[in-house]
Image (cartoon, rainbow, N blue to C red; front, side):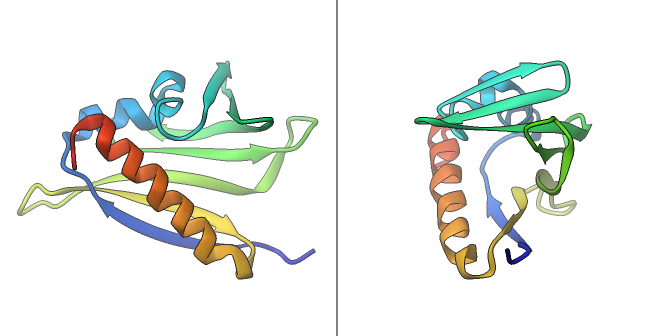
Length: 130
């Protein structure tokens, strides 16, 4: 099995960092744009899409700035992969953007980035940042 490679994409978002943080850090916020449903029990989040589900541990968070979810295996042990959502605010212009850090198989990076673009588009519609 090929190991996955890390990639980053940045999306400008017309939103306050506080509002954006609610959509990236809470099960209810994430279930509105990232997955069909998101459940949490303690530090573990279950992301549900159609008939599949993936489990991740909230590895770290900094209120108003970023969250990092580490994917876990069936025994709830950390894997080598994670995704991180980081809110960036330009000091001069105060423009807000969302940095996505994720992993994908080398030949699937383009497809993975497209998926993020679609999901972030949904997020922008939700918060009126279109």
